[in-house]
Image 1 (spheres, chains in turn red, yellow):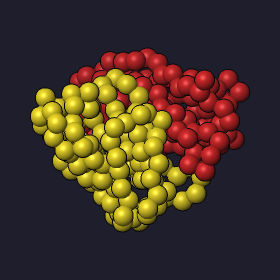
Image 2: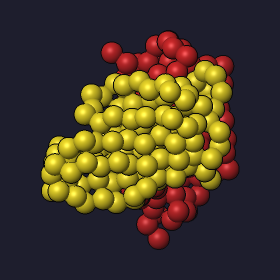
Image 3: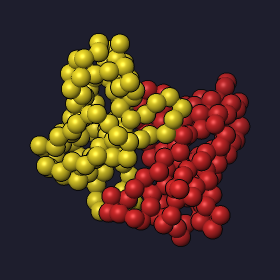
Length: 114
Length: 114
């Protein structure tokens, strides 16, 4: 069964600290993995996309990694800011159809305290 | 920010009413999607469209219906609302072929059926 599991479910850190969010998936065949940020009351916004051949990609203070062999990804946030408080959702796409079927994780709820 | 708009943002309405949730995008995207999201849970695809006059049911069974008469407009209708329809509904769109194009999300409609 194709699944996406994220950990931790929730995380509280102090402003300025770093954190790492995890995503494990069993989706096959694999096409790409995307991390979305969803602020409270808003729709998700794409942060990064990683394909099979990529193992690291950065977007400002966000760095995503992908290990396609172990089917694991992480999102590292450096020097956290209050505005980083949000849900971070891991989404994996398969190559099974033109639509690119998406499998969503339940998200990690990150809270950054001052 | 993506140009995709959903109205209303919030709706509280009684059981049995007919409801239409509006979604419009100004990016000329061919593909559009409706998702249902409950607190702490993953997004579930309930409808999608490849283009004008194309509509398909998603993975999660839904009593709602959709139409795609114009490229930019993808409304969702509930003929007779029930408390079980209470949820957040997110609309999204994407461009291009395959699964590497990001989905751009609206900010959602939070629906409460009394």
